[in-house]
Image (cartoon, rainbow over all chains, first blue to last red; front, side, top):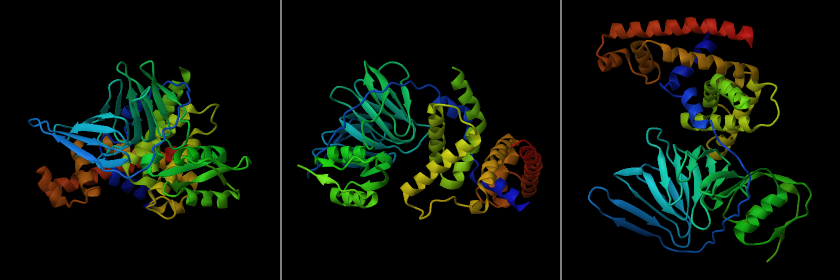
Length: 256
Length: 167
């Protein structure tokens, strides 16, 4: 009898009306399309710099603009959302009038606080991203706009139509003004912002390819069908290499 | 699209049980919904048939929850937050269906009974505090709560018998 009361107490302790509603969750999910196109990895060089904060006041709709120069810089928006700007990126919004609507250029990594009543939207010249609460990055400028999702769900649309829904580990780019899903060329496209590399049974060759691109150093090891599972902070390449060499009993050659 | 309809059917049956199952691990409703939705999306993308959907879903959700807990580094040994250590996998899998039905039963309670019950059990309010908040007498509050619990316990008894009969 006490075990069964346990279940009831658990349900009551967490109950909220409308939570875990299968109808609304299904509406959120139903309907993605797919095609596979490889994408190039963007490398951000590290150097010291300062960040400029610009504030324009215009009646009640005061704008705040963030800008980064040559290192990634993180800021927290008025709703608690955290944004990390890659070098040369900008982001502007109205913290009081429209705290969940931002406009950006360049590359930004988002950790959006959840607020189902107020979707968070990102506007760019040719695309729009809408989320309820997730972590992901948006890269615009250059040939196209692309979105890589780290966790949660994101809706990515061009200027027309409903766009597509992306989940954790998925990426998409605009092709002829329509978002198309693609395979991320490398496992951790947002490592520059998140600060770590995560691998799950990832072939060693792919791991080294990503580390090479990120650190600008050529790395190679005998191709033995080895694969790696683990998480490494991006601070020291030598520490990472040492851990991998120990874990996989392999010797990694560092070139350049 | 027959596959989409099939996934939809599985989703409608299992979304809430999986959310409650994940809730035992993660304790945070938002994180739970993200995890469960991701699992259903990967089910959608799965090629080939799946023999035991119930087991597949539970295993996939559990693995993602454990990954999430490791990532958050807030626990040393990834594991659920309550007495699950004493349950077998089968029992834990069955439990999620019962909890989902209980949840639906709470939603279906008449409004005042549900509100009194939740204020008492979830928010830890005393009968007097609830009475003051809702403008009722303490006796009425007590009444609402005991009727609500009666409904839930009776329904649950039937549910559990039914579930063990058919699963």
